[in-house]
Length: 470
Image 1: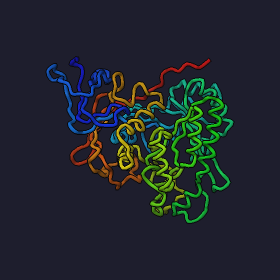
Image 2: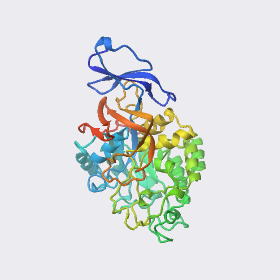
Image 3: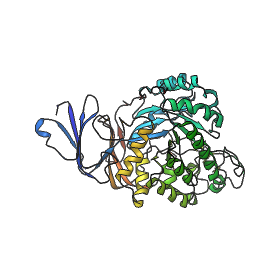
Image 4: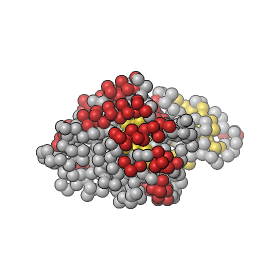
């Protein structure tokens, strides 16, 4: 071992989803590259060789989380969220890499020029690494426009099958999806889809219909029925099978489409599916009147639906859990009026994904292999980082989180720009003590439960060149 290396060790290590149990181990990290050069399920005598050792004792060390669904909204709507706040919140929750969604920034990330604007806006303001996602809208559903967008450095593109919430990011119809899929399939790029389509029994796709007491969560829930997700997912899977295009269903909230998804996977349709902590931790029956900070689209559904989503995760039918961090100002959440139908639909939660999933999941049989698969490896694979992020293995970035899964904790500091979140006041099983990115500590928890951050050294990561299939 070289003196240019450092050893990080713990009596409770998790290297990948192969590890359901905790065991003593260590990683050796090259200080220059920030890469893991060795990963051992034993504690070796490195002190005699003069190598620096950091021993975390009984704290759990596991791969840094990857969150493939975060709305930073910067530039343009940086009064909703900002790169500095969002990435600080990410590392405070053990997340080392995020994928930034193509909205609600201005300009929306649907052109190569817009990609460059976002890169400049992020420069010097990142505590986590970031990959960029592009948008599929009617205006760019062509080979030239999409290839230009992909060549600019986005790792995937996202389409809405309903109103996106902002007028400058238009919904893509089935013709747009069909035009885009052969282009994306040729480059092995997944199409991410917000899968809701208006049905005759829903009020409207914006969720602003007047169908009862607007301060009751049940009024909003009726405006986004399960059938909206089922209809959209059925259509997307049909098109994906026809064009052999990889598709990714974002934020599945309803269990109703699960049989359709399971059948498609059995036919080898290239589909992956995510859900979110808020669908797994909360249920519609428990949301108080006027508590608009619980509003998101698609909506949080009932307790039986929540149980079905957990079962789908454990059965392998849902692939990952991401935050869908979608913040806004308190005014946009209509907290004074408590009007669910007018409030912005989005939940702030990038900081709380690990602890929220562990708190609810451990009583359902979730172990550390599940956490690694759902929170680290699968999101990394989705955004093309499967050979760099999501595991503690030789050649991978030395990104890891140090945490205590037994400690009871509450939210002491919220590092998002706006502090309104349904996780405020929730008691968690577990506490994040430190986060390391590229082998360097970027966040630590102080004795008074406040957080301390290093200077921002995060990077925009770009995809490897993917040749077009002939």
